[in-house]
Image (tube, rainbow, N blue to C red):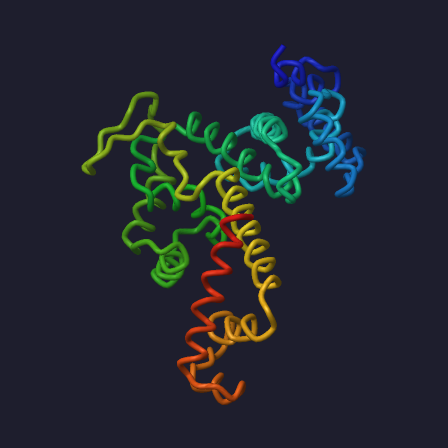
Amino acid sequence: MHILTCLIRSRIINALTLPSISSLDSYDQYMRTIKTFPMLTAEEEHEYATRLKKFNDLEAAQQLIVSHLRLVAKIARGYMGYGLPQSDLIQEGNIGLMKAVKRFDPDHGVRLVSFAIHWIKAEIHEYVIRNWRLVKTATTKAQRKLFFNLRSMKDGINTLNPEEVNQIAAKLNVKPEEVMEMEYRLNGQELSLDTPVDTDDDESYNPLAYLEADTPEPSAFLEQEQNEHLQSTALSNALESLDDRSRRILEARWLNEKNNSTLHDLAGEFGVSAERIRQIEQKAMQNVKKAMLAA
């Protein structure tokens, strides 16, 4: 059975994600309940994530999920301005959390909270777009950015004045006219948005397309981070394999964050010609390259 299906059917998770939190009393009870789940230490989180990855341990997955339900609730509160039920926002966020737990790799050296935020927000974004029935609310990247930020950046419910418009435009790197247009749309009449929207741009967007992110997914960030770490480690090991003089020359010439030394500077330091320093540098670079390729 698929792991997410198992989780949803498991007793604790099923109880938390059913529509029973839709009323005020049950919502308050839900919030009190999730605060009783303890936060995990880095060691506990790594242990549970490893058990889930290696043995498909559903109990470990459950512990990872319930310990982060407060995170979902906190993120969901940021979307209250769209007039959607808070309980529904939380349920959608919980689905994103489950997806994050399923994809989480403890060996990447980052905490689950950093990885999960993307998936939680993605599910909530999709739910908001599906249920906010505004025609052509966000048909460009700038408008989608405004759609998810304008309400939280406004000071109160009054119409933005020119100074506020310019400030928001500068912060989000959009045009003031786009800020005013989005404010008008957000305050306008709600209409159907069930079908794809044709725009004046080269592309047409349907609701799911609005969720397209400008940045890579967490897995891409983690892969890049891991590659940079491996390269840094390989470079460090390669430098350690050099003799003191060669290592000093490379570090002074290429690894000094402030001012790199010239050939003549190092020639004076070691009492040899600048040409000799260049030869040592060239040979050291070749040795470092070989060492990194062999790593």
